[in-house]
Image (cartoon, rainbow, N blue to C red; front, side):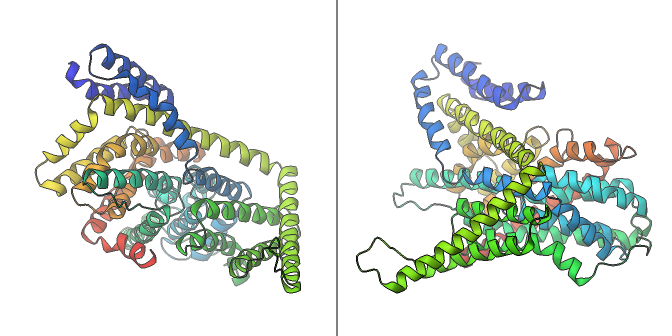
Length: 516
């Protein structure tokens, strides 16, 4: 039994989580217990735990992970300011006369909210409270309606920006560097968040297309499952459509455009997104549109102009033109700052700001607690020789690199029934990703395949988070079994998407190669 302490450690963690213990405490507790068991059995050098402080410091000062609370804040502010609700209402009225139109509108809204917020829980709850009752009143099959809402809300995990992709990019970058060291390469290449975002963008849109195609086909063969809505509501005008779609589109362009264009780092782009969400929330809270839009355009002009024509007033050769340009920059900054302050004050008075900050801190604390404790777990697991065992298992798989990857994808899929995406990403992937990269798999393509696979962890019973979110927000007539039946075909569609990207890797690798 002693030589299998690493495997017993993993089994003990699964048991603690299934028994209902808090995840972070389970991870850290199991790691500490098995560290001392390994030390007592002579299987582990306890001095390895001396590296914990350095690991914790490295995580807390990681520039990539700093973007997580900023993206979370951006998403929560948009959800609290009812932008998502207005978007759902407008798109529903636009498509309600098409068979399956309400379902298509929910998928499209889920994609837009995914690209502008990336918060799965908020999206599922919002659509469960707004879109699901409308679909049921129209006569949609209860299971189908539940499945569409639940699945569309999880698009925030594959369409950038998302917390999954940020954490995954950090893990894959470390794994890629480790693989290169083991291959004897000392000119190390890295993987950036931008590359993972670019790699996931087209597969995410492909997944949206697959969902819409399924809804259209099902509507053709089973029209009773999704009848068109009665022509009672007037279709939205072009101005209403523009007013609903413009805010998320502006944020998508500002955030993803800055990252993919190389203008800003992910953390800087997340800051832009958070400020943009606060200004848009200010408009929804009744602030002057002229002031808010003036602030947005002032900050936008300032960012572009300062990059094109920077001014350094401390230099000795400053001219009058430089002073005038510096004065213009100061004016733009003051206008933008006043708009931000006004939006913050209104959000505070409307009790939007406090709840948004509380939610942001809660989500961020959960994510970082899991990442920190997972670093303890992985350190002990490596100390017990677990990394060597994982490498031996993968290299012994029939079929070589392809067989090893199939085994890992099935393992991740099965673990998704019981574990959250954060636990799988920070505990399992650091062990298997370096071996798979050494075997010759492209790291960006591999990251995208894993991301879509991890997305299913939100939908797979019994512990899929989206299932719980929707169960809490759904009307009483929607049962847990309705939700389980509804997500089943969409889980199969996600498997189809993985197979499609497996055989056509250019879907994931084309854009990163073009941009980077």
